[in-house]
Image (cartoon, rainbow, N blue to C red; front, side, top):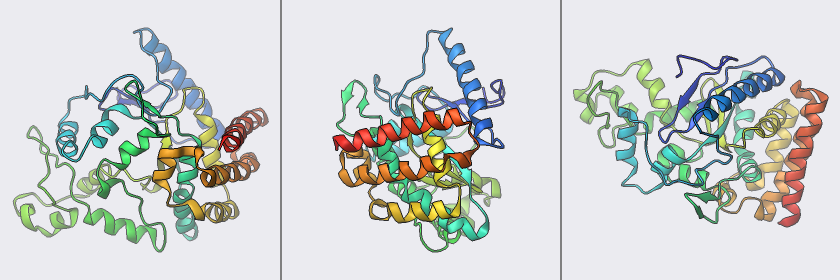
Length: 336
C-alpha cells in the first residue's frame, strides 16, 4: 500500500492490470538513488516471491491479454472512455510498464533547452531500450508495443508536446484545451462530459454550468490524465522508456542523467538528435533496426557515457554501465 512504504522509503502502488510501481523518493545523488531503489526492489521481489509471484522483465505483459483487476471509479471511467477508440488505451492501462525518470527542470535560463533535449532524445532512447515486442503470447513485430499502445490511447493526451518557443506557455495552453478524461464525483461514475475542456470548466461553459467551480486540486488532477512522452510537474518526468529487467534499470537512468548533466551536453544532444526528433512511431515499430535511429543512439551513448563521471556514481558502476549501454548501442547498430 502507498501508506506502507518500502524500507528505503519508496511508496509502492498498483496499476489497473496489477502492475507493481515503485515511486522512489528524490535523492541527493544518483548513487543514493541507486542504493535506495536497489534495496526497495530487492525487498519487493522477496515479498512477491513468498506468494509465488515474480516481476516481469519487459515493458508489456508477454503472457496475458489486457484485463483490469483494480476496480476504482477512475479506472472504470478510463476504460469506458478508451474502449471505443481502440485497444491501445486498455492495453496501456492493464498490460504496460514504463521506466519513468524524473530530472530537474534546471534554472530558468535553461528550461527551454532541457525541455527540448528531453524530447529530442526520446526516439533514439526509446529505440535503444525497447524490449516490448511480445504481448499476450504473440510476437507483435514491433520493438516497443508498449509505446504504440500509449500512442494509440487518445491523441490529445499522448502526442508529443511542442518543444520549441516558451514551453511553459505552450504547456499551459495545451492543458487548458484538453478535454477532461474523468471528473471526480465521489460514489457516482467519474465519466466526464464529452468534449468539456478545463478552460470550459473554468468559464462555466456548456455542461460546466452544472458543475462546481474547479479548484487548483482539480487542475493538478487533470495533469495526471496527460500521458505525453515528457510531462512537466515542476520537474521533467521522462515517460518514454520501456520498463527494464529488475537488475538492469540503472543504465538507462544513468544515461538520461548524464545526457542532461551540463548545458553544453544538452546542446550536443539537441544537435545530434535533431534529424530523428520526431520519429517516435518509427522508433516504436522498428527500434534500432532503423539505421538512422541506430546511428543516433550510438552517438548518444558515446556522449552520455563520456559524461557519466558527472553523475556521482562509483567508478566500478560507471564501467559496468558504459559496457552495458555501449554494447547494446553498437551491437544493434552492427545488426542494423
